[in-house]
Length: 599
Image 1: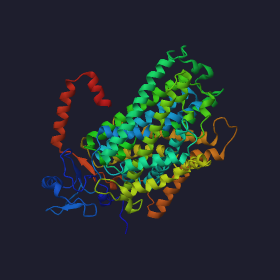
Image 2: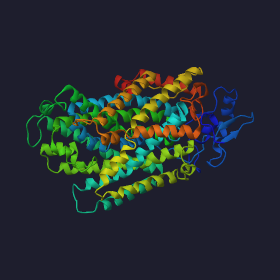
Image 3: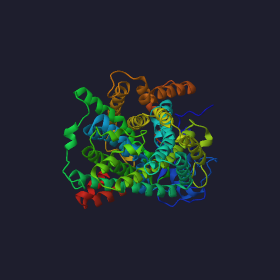
Image 4: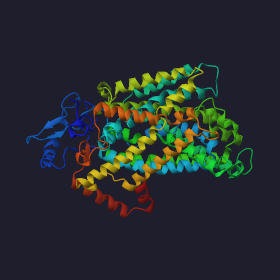
């Protein structure tokens, strides 16, 4: 008989632990997993067990429970070998590594062509407001439940296992496809300097480097991604300064530019209000895709130090860093590059850096040498995203394997904290990148990307719905929010706002996929390129329902497990921490208090 995913016992193999088999607790996180808050034995179990916490069995193949004298048990929190070595700095740069890549540096050019500079800014700002609610929902859940795979578990537990299977498989496919896609993009970027060497040779070099990076322990991997992400951040700062200078007429060609291109050829593409609105709608999905990866803070929750503090901080700081970067860069691009510049359409594919609006902006400014430097930055950004894709995909595989949605062998973690089987499977799929030299590679990746093109939007909607359902269950069971290490700043109403806005983005995407910008009628090819992931999501959902014979739409609130895997602080300790925090903030400056709340 398969385990019932709606029961607490089902989650005994996905509870947080994540020390290596030979590593002792260093005392950085003195929280414990809550087995049942309703159990009178709970407090006694915790007090009896804390002194011997390091004596619990560490091997994931062994029992995950320690029986107490009273006959009840405390779940052994050390039930996997994943390391807990990631700090706020690592979590932030991992998310930056996954989110800042071709979406900003290359694909924004296509959005500028179809929507215009105003659509570019409006589209990214609207999507970022949705993302703020997602980040807060994710921060609350991940701080309370720092489990393997993060939101993969939350959706399964708080919404419905079949819905979770469909969303998680779609999300997994996105990262699986992204690895070969980014490797091909890297080989295409190299053509800026040398187009005579076979593209597969460059793919082999980048593939090997990424494979080696992901074979390191998680802390070394985090440091590698930190260096790559810092290059991107410094490049964004540098381009922002340069963009302001060029806009004000400080370039070699001179002449004040300002909002010139917002007036001619215009802020929006099109001659009628309907065509301009359609151009704006076409930007939304590109914006959502470009932000994908920011949810990596939850995927990494199981490998972070002291999740109750690191996850909320990393989530909020990641949001502000990425959002400010995108909005600033895209505003400057709209000032420096007209939407009808033919070079925006010169790329051989959607990942060709030759069509990068940032490179075109520098070329328009007449600065020699910098376009080559910007292409080098784009190359590093692409490799960084490919590196993050292996990490995200392998961790999602581990989570889905623990839940029972993928073969069990994918959940295996070695003594160095590496999910080797999941990493190797991801790298195996990455071999598709060796079609880079084929003249059909663009067509192949167009359809591979279509398999999961909307997965980010589905994932974000599911995260917000998970928070809503979790709060409903807490209310039904008369549980206080004071039990939670972090409370979402946008609360339930913000989560609903995010769900509704993301649904409207899906509606806009449906319209622009079926009736593409500039076309006179419907296009089946365009529709399936943009919307193929929805029928696949529905097929996965129905298939899982038939397989599990679970006909309920939602998990009943009274049956929802809101305890397993949750980190709970000692109430007195928590109260003392809050008192000290309030005293500190009372004497702090306004700027310090502002940063504390929002960052």
